[in-house]
Image 1: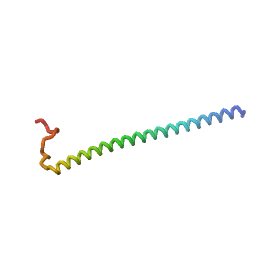
Image 2: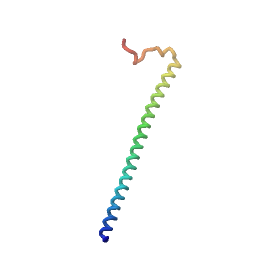
Image 3: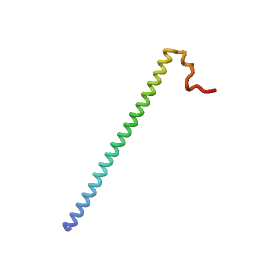
Image 4: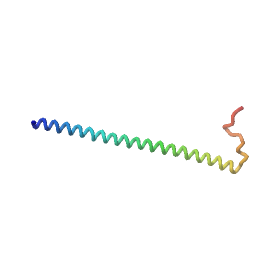
Amino acid sequence: MSVATIISIVSGLISIAKWFITYAEQKRWMEAGEARAILKGLEDAELVIRDAREARQAVRDQHTRDPGSIMGDDEFKRPD
């Protein structure tokens, strides 16, 4: 084997190793981005759930103070 052949083989192996390292790094960045997107979605869902719970508690408090208001008219009444 000549020196040129050995250098060519080593160069090819280095190129393959570089490609694997680049691929692993890109995959790690994609997974980090995916994790951030999932976290943001969960935080947004938590805010919506918290708002709904607060609204439900406000209605419960109102009906506890004034039980007669349960049968009262509101904006959701059917127009029939």
